[in-house]
Image (cartoon, rainbow, N blue to C red; front, side):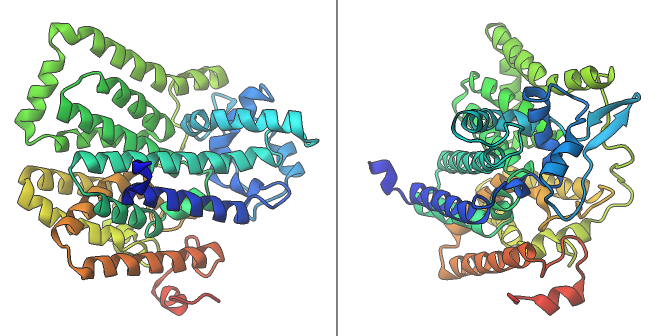
Length: 431
């Protein structure tokens, strides 16, 4: 019972309760609730009914489903043609994490309802929403454990968790669009960072098996997120310490562990090529066609500050968190410099995507999975600057984010067509 008296645990419980209450009110009362499976989420989810119900990896059931469940203002096509055969544009990682919840929905539908067990009737999207809530809470738990490893106090962790959820678009993508990939990547990132740091601190190489597991799923959800592996040196006090620990892994007594780790990673990553081969006869397929990174035509300032999608404009808590680098510098200059370089590289790479605003989205959604790193920085800021102003700034960021989430949800903020005039015309307005 002592555990439930800790501020950070109470914060997670509050977040979980609020998420369930809002989701149950927003998403669950409707007849089909299939608005949960919209846009990209259609592609991420389609692997499950295709494999378990229709046994059809050409996804020919799509038209019938959309006729039976006519929801969504924008038609969305997730199927692509390759080698004269049909495949899914989106990767299978999200479907793997949602699979247990999909199976539960399938049995509930068959045993307790008269609804069709077609993968899209009421309980299927509801369980996708529940899956998102589960992985949200699990991700927050891993962040709590990570911050405890860095010796942050319970009260600081509680503030960080509250800010991380209510002052960023993690709130939106956990509740309003829970079928998107971001909350699942957020969970995997949090677990990956926790177990990697646990290995760095304890030296117990068995933690690398779990690091390998979560890293494999990260790649299987969105391969570009595999960039998180380059954060590894941050958890050591310098490159020399990092290289020494890596070298120790290759001692003879660790060969078996290394083999298990690599085999597990390969087995997870190979799921996608196998699916592609079954569909098209090709193992390696770039499913995004002409959509590419344009490294000479980057939009770094727009990515961070523009009225269209600026990450720091729509979620200023991220910019405030960056101030934590100043205080991390006082504790460990290597960590501060390395984390700054890593985040700068991430900002640059994501700003090079042909659609740097990432389509219809609230803020820069591609940063949701990287929120555990901002959580660390915010914790450093709160620990050193213990004055009231930091907490007031957090509260203001929460209020701004919640108002703008409401505005985005009800179309006062357009999903991709914002500019200076439109932003200030609706600023803080609820009608």
